[in-house]
Length: 285
Image (tube, rainbow, N blue to C red):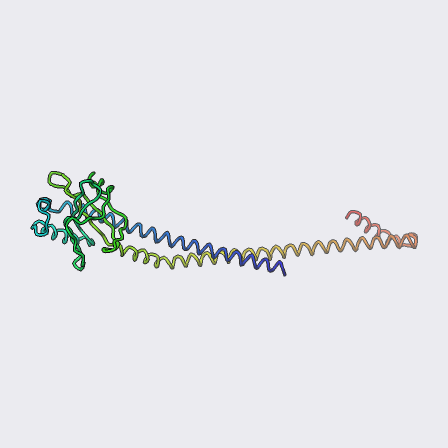
């Protein structure tokens, strides 16, 4: 009874450990799938944003921007012209914001000079408003490279990813930065969608693991039954042989005792030979 209880306890323990391991592996797989998808989508958005910033920087009227810098007010005709160009490009690339920023003298930050915002936005951007750019990104712009940022969580504009490219004048001088902000709220939705699509695969993996565990347990129990049956047959054979030997030995002892008591001369020759042969076999055993 105790042995059967211990066997059942081991089986339940194995199944429990297998279930826990499967649950942990499934959670890790889901987390890894979600993380990899999010990272891939964000990297793709960043690359597209940098290409968009470089393209816009190559198409803007830099003469108009230099004219605007001489009189940086919204009433400047150059401001209106560049604002329209940025709005057209923003719609073309589906950007959240598209703007031109000026690098501070200490190269530690930047300020927005002209920007295009979504038509439904209630926010009004002012000329010279600080923007999210750090010294490392500015150094990349100064060296002629593009950059992209991590996801920025802004209390006003929400979550977005920013990218920038250098805006160069006709003589190759650095005039500022063309910045592109892309909405990344859809990224979380994409990651969740990937996880939902992966659920059938995870369920199939779980079913496969469960079937595998049951098959292993079934094979183990079958092997134990076969081994027990084989051991039982061998034990019965051994007991039969032992019983035969014991009976033969007793027969031999009884005959010799009878001969010793009654006298061996009273036995017949054939009986003496049979007893002698049995005794010889007993001595060999």
